Structures are given as C-alpha cells and as structure tokens.
Length: 348
Image (cartoon, rainbow, N blue to C red; front, side, top):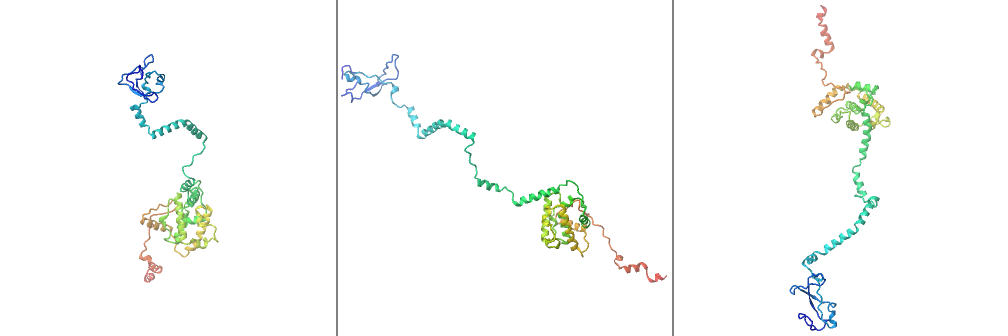
C-alpha cells in the first residue's frame, strides 16, 4: 500500500482480484457538485467498480467518489409490498385492460358500422321450426272457421234492415194451425227451427227436448243452438227416409237450412206441411195452445222458465171447462121425451 493510502482501507494482493468496500453517502450534494460525506456509522458499503479503481493502475492509490443512495439497488419495504401484490392474475388483468384500451376505439367504430349498415343480421331468438310449432297452437281449426263462416251469414239475417211482410199461403197455414202470428221475413228466419220442432212434436210427442231450446231467438248463438237441436231430433226420427225428404224427390236438404235463403226455406216448409197432413190424418184435432201449456208445466217442474217470442201466442189461463150435468149426458131421445112430457099429459 502507498504512503498516501487511507489507514482504514484493507490490504489486497492485486487490484483486479480485490473487492473494495467504499462508504456511500446520502444523495445530498453541495452547490459545487461535490458529495458531502456522511458519518461512518451511517455509511453503507458497495463493491467498487473497475472504473473507480482505474487510478490504481498508474501506481497511485485514490479514494473513489462515493455513490449516491439513489443509485443503490436496495429494495425498500414499500417496493417489497408492491412486488408481492403483482401476482400473475393481476398482471393478466392489467394486460387485458391495456389491450381493451388499445382496441377500444376500433371496436366502437366497428359496432357503429354494424348498427348503421345492419349487416351481418342478428340470429333469431328461436328456430323457425319452433316458431311454427308455437304459432300453430293459435291458428283456428277447420270447424271453427266453418262456424265463423256460417255465423257471418246468419248474423246478416238477424239484422232487420227493412220490414218485409210475408204473404205466403204456407205461412198463413202455420199461423192458423200452430197459433202463430208470423208477419215478417225476420220473424220467419229467426223462428224457423222452432216452427219445425213444433211440427215434429205434433207427430212425435215427447221426442222433442224443449229444455234444450233457447227462446232468445234474436241472438246468433241461440239460433245456432236451436238448429243443432233440430238436426239431432231430425236424425233420431229418421226424417231423411220419409218420402217427401228423400234425395231423389227433393233438392233442398235439412242440413242446408241454416244458410238457406227465404225461398228455399219456404219450399222446405211446404214439404213439411205435406208430410204433416199425411201423418196427422186420422188423429184427434191438434190443439197448439194446450200443447204449449203442457210443455210450460213440464219445464216448470224441472226448473226451466220459458219466455215465448212475441209471434208465439200463449195464454196461461185455460178456457173454462163446461161441466156436463146428468141431463146433458142423457141420449137425445130421452131428452126429447123429457121435453115433450109423458103421454098422459100429451092427450090432455
């Protein structure tokens, strides 16, 4: 060691193999730029670099300048805490955030272009097959469509747009025999099934179920129900086998009456009149009013109240019955003898 070397420096063999510990001062420099040394108790040591020991190659020993604390690679407790928090998951999140921020502008522009151009189209929420199966539940059936078509025609007939009087001999015969007061086409149309049921009840007593008949004839549902009752009774008594209603003798059919016009219904009513007169021949006289009283009484027993339309005559009170006395029950010759008196009185 040279004579000018510091007494606290350790001795070493060669500069290339030596490790010199130098005191490091705080990073506090004087205005002139020279570092201010710190006390030896607060000094820190770091290995000297070859550049600092370059002066020793010439044979002179120089004390290297101390390094500032800022250049010392020593981790502080705060740095250790930050290193511990930087886990792989957080690193991945930070990378994703940087990627999203990098591509955010391009993604928003692409979405704006899709919204303006409308392409590519969005896929439907359900498959086409599932949509068809779901929609088929709400499609009307064929029977419902048929009833709707029939009701459209019937509803037009239920609206009395103008008063047309009926001046037909068949209607006059119906009014006389069955105690009716049909005067217009509207009354004839809405009461047609009840008229035919009345004629069937006269020939086939107790076959017509009057409790199923709806007497609110001004409604479409009531008219359709009455036609169904008529069609049922018509099939039960085999009216299609009658001579007047066979397919080869008549072109009008019972099943076509709900949608038939007034003229076809009049033709069918004439056939019913012919059949009625042929079947009623030899039977006692038909009393329509007494038949209605009997029907009302039977329905009252089962709890059904009947309100007849205005064109059906009905008298709740039966006409008074004349009580026959014993004199009236005698034969006519006895009453004549009683009137003339005895033979003795005749010769006086």
